[in-house]
Length: 98
Image 1 (spheres, helix red, strand yellow):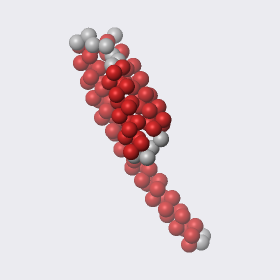
Image 2 (cartoon, rainbow, N blue to C red; image 1 turned 45 degrees about the horizontal axis):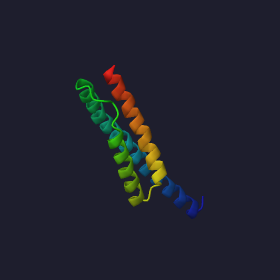
Image 3 (cartoon, helix red, strand yellow; image 1 turned 90 degrees about the horizontal axis):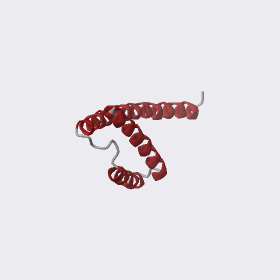
Image 4 (cartoon, rainbow, N blue to C red; image 1 turned 45 degrees about the vertical axis):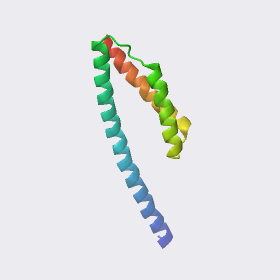
């Protein structure tokens, strides 16, 4: 193996190690976020509030798009990602109301 290939392999491992750490952070962050949204769902169910809040959801999507732009992340991807999460949260909230 040449020095260049060995160095490339080392850099690849470093990047993959970072990706693995970031994936763990994402999973734990999502778990914490869903713990809070579960609490919100129970609160909404207890007080007969609707499972969805379109005004808040719209503001959150706008906020995330702005954050994505500032973070140099594709805002369409960020919007799609948040929409996916919101739909999952609403599904959980509806389950609490059943």
